[in-house]
Image 1 (tube, rainbow, N blue to C red):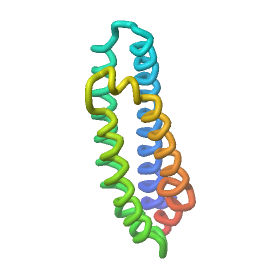
Image 2 (image 1 turned 45 degrees about the horizontal axis):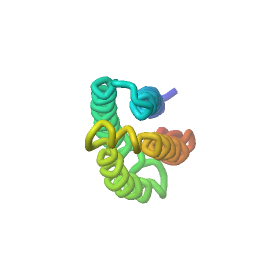
Image 3 (image 1 turned 135 degrees about the vertical axis):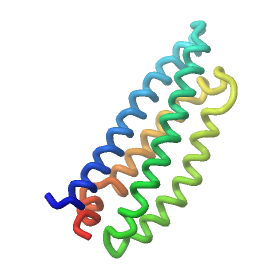
Image 4 (image 1 turned 30 degrees about the vertical axis):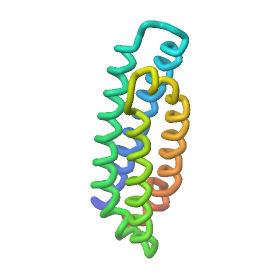
Amino acid sequence: MSPASRDVAEIGALLLEQHDGLRVRTARCLALSERLLRGEPIAAELATEVARLREQFLEHNEVEQRLLEPLLARSDAWGPLRVERMLEEHAAEHAAFLEQLDGGTAEIAARFSDFAEELDAHMAAEERTFLSRRVLEDAART
């Protein structure tokens, strides 16, 4: 494996690992949200987990954009269009996701199921497009 291929593979693995971590934290927040909505007094615990999710999400977005933008730009003839799409999607979607994590704990809990579903769909779409094996292999060849 060439150094460029190894770097691309490592970047892909890192970002997929971060997606897995976000899924774990989201599942934890979802379970806590459901418990809070059933009346359990766990608002402080949920608030802490949501704050951790927000931090993890922001960190992932920064890393993803910083590492993927140059890779996608050089991947193939579609690279510049992928970068443009990624930047447009990320700006709008990430702002919407963060907005869903704002507000009182009960408000967040009430909408968390939808948030979890939307975030998972977002990451799955990235995994089919920007983080797909074909796109990453194209970037490694350049």
